[in-house]
Length: 129
Image (cartoon, rainbow, N blue to C red; front, side, top):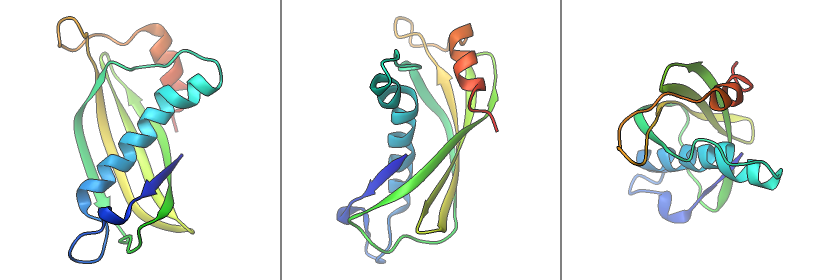
């Protein structure tokens, strides 16, 4: 998946601000579960999930806006109502960050966690490393 690095993502230090990396993975996650599936004529998956945890290891700063970075995404593990996604953000062969997020499936009616369905589990397991 590609994520656009906007000029206003750069901060006073001349590199992409740390918070922008979470936006890049959010865009990749939306593509992974929603947009790419719609393009294939498939139903979107896991529209009702929230981020339970996110951690970022910053490796090499991004010093330029107006470009696209690659965001590679894969599933690390699947639990009862949550799953762990891993991401690598890179450009031109340079690894900029490794990110991990815990996603929790929720019921939109109760706003509480819910078990993953068998269909969701099958989908996620296709992308396990």
